[in-house]
Image (cartoon, rainbow, N blue to C red):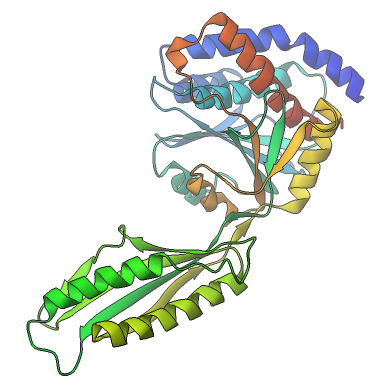
Length: 363
């Protein structure tokens, strides 16, 4: 099917997309339960992880088939925000459209409706919800995206993480009542180290140091007159990580002399940076240009929201984010019909059209 034929088919689907979105919005059950019911009613091959997600395979998969996992984070309660409504409605629209479309997609979709409850992502990945997929694409709203447009995440999604422990001990000539002074020295060390930066080493890729929790001393041993600070360094590149490690060592050496305490700095677990997959981003960009026109897709360098749970997927598969306009400043219950039409037109419809173009290979 050509792009123009697909466009005509998609345009005819517009009224049904609005109706299905309205039905989802007005449902008296959670989006999570609503989508599970839809998957079951369509006879889709589904796997339900109780309370954490519904994984829906719309088509049977044979050896050699290419499978793309699509992740939608949906509300598990009856008070979703607008972005959760958009995610759920886009997934619902995808299921409904593919049921009516006369051709089988080039890429077989595996729809992951992940509960917004904490811990859902790790549970789904541990239960192999993405096994056999070639890549995973996470759908999310982003306030940097204009209405009617989409965007991909480029570069680093999650920085390199280097955890550490700093042990403070009294100096050899200090008294046995040194614990209070160690507490003060720990607070000074956390304050100084939290302000370190490597912008001079790599101006485009800043690095930071974070203490857990919030720079407070979290372990103390009065018998040994020692305390520990735990934290992590977040870095985009190895160069910036090494730069901050060097600054940390020199700062601690200066604080030893100034505060008359001993510091022991130990590196612990290191987690590599997780990057957006360039090949997947290329497929998305090409599809968006065909579906929406040139200039309707942007590339976002920095995430301004917490998408931590996606890291569980990225440790298993190449992946990226596909963003649409965020409407999260509104409340779901306050939506009027005019609001709903605007959200479908500028948020759901362009996102759905890009996803379908990717799956069907019409671009």
